[in-house]
Amino acid sequence: MPSLLAVFALVTWQVVADGPLLGPDEQISRALVGHGPVGLAEFFTDLGNMQVALPVLACAIIFSLTRGIRREPLYSALAMAAVPALVVPLKVWTDRQGPLTEATGYYPSGHTATAAVAYGAASMLLVPHLKRSWPMLVAAILLSAATSIGLVLRGYHWPLDVVGSWCLSGVLLMALWVAGRRSRRRSSSSTPTDRGGPGRGAG
Image 1 (spheres, rainbow, N blue to C red):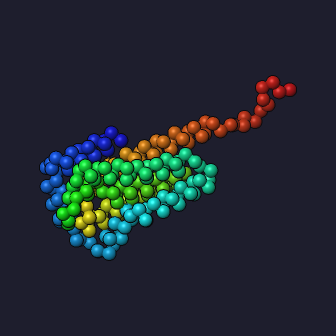
Image 2: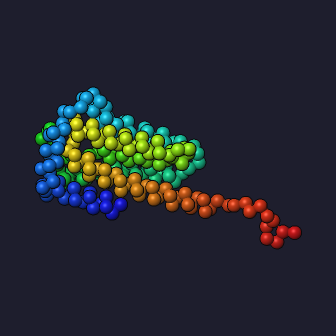
Image 3: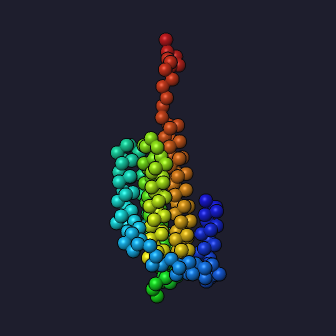
């Protein structure tokens, strides 16, 4: 987590101070914009829409609740709520202009953060109930990566906008994972165990 915060701070500083990293960032963006199948790239960007990502997380939350799990779904909802709470003020503060527009407020990428946290949190909720965890985790990574690729190819965001959101999302997901692990430990430690023998004072 410290390394993610350090990279996020570095990228944010570069954006605010118009640092030297913005030159290569803009060059990479111009080299990539317009490449690849337009329809597929647009589909990838839609994966980061609230209308798409939130129902996926909502289904995972409902599934966990039906299994009698309470804390982890709550933590996941809080992590998702933290995305706009963090991203919107950062967009206003950094005031970065977009690649193909004069409009500002493009750093960090809200679509990237939405996709990463929604799909990542959903995978964390579902993995404990699956025999194999890696397919769900891989799916979450691929969906988040596809969103980021689509945003850059369509010229909706600079690459550094996406990198900043990856770091921010990574911090939220790591905090969610730690909170979920502690919750499971408390639940397991509070569960009474049957030792199979007579109680004290029996007989």
